[in-house]
Image (cartoon, rainbow, N blue to C red; front, side):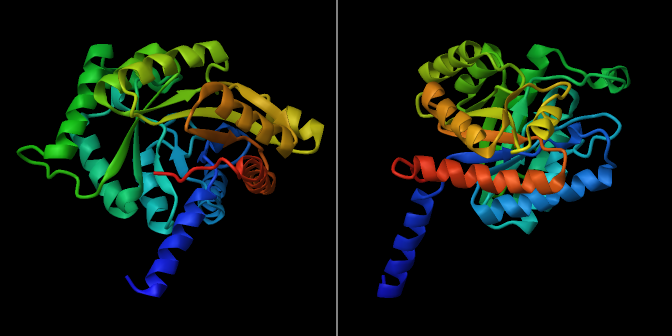
Length: 308
């Protein structure tokens, strides 16, 4: 190794140690007063910003309703993966309950090409609600069939099948949930596990699944996902924090949100916190992503570890 190469390696290692354990879940489709085009533009800009700032992960949800810009997160992951260079890009979640496992495996492999080794595949056992529920009923699997479909997808990705090639790039497997069943399945399948505090903010209900998961798979990586609104204007923070379908744990200043993140890291023992920042204004949202990241990085600087 030359002197230049040695310096480059050390510099990269130092950069990784300085990265706080933060990811982003783009959840802007809850802003019902904006056109889908605007929501997608904001999310795209957020992805580029998160990559530039140094967030570890960018995850995308799967929602099916009018006004929802993220009905196929694997498609969006492929696009965002091709426009970013450092951040991991993935799904939170891919709704296996209403998706064909073979076609889903093909979509994941395609996304892997554009994301390289930065793809996170997040599986969920949830369902679709609202008007689309009855329309998609013919695709719906029960719990056993859903879990089997997840196993089928992983088998195809790893080994292929008679008509599908295995995935060519490496990727991380995540299970997302808000209860013990998903955590137990994650441990059984040797997936990483992310607990959705924005669906159920009860800390006790979060710690129990995390404990079961760690007991069954000590080597697995854990994360908690939390909804925040960072704004120094109390009226704006309060208004944006009142959302249907998601529970905001902190609506206040960026410092309060950063303190919430640090407290969650300590209380849950999670390796990372994934934030879904819900400011309805794009400028407020992007400012919040910058400020929360900087404040958490400053708070955790002596203890920050390299990300995998």
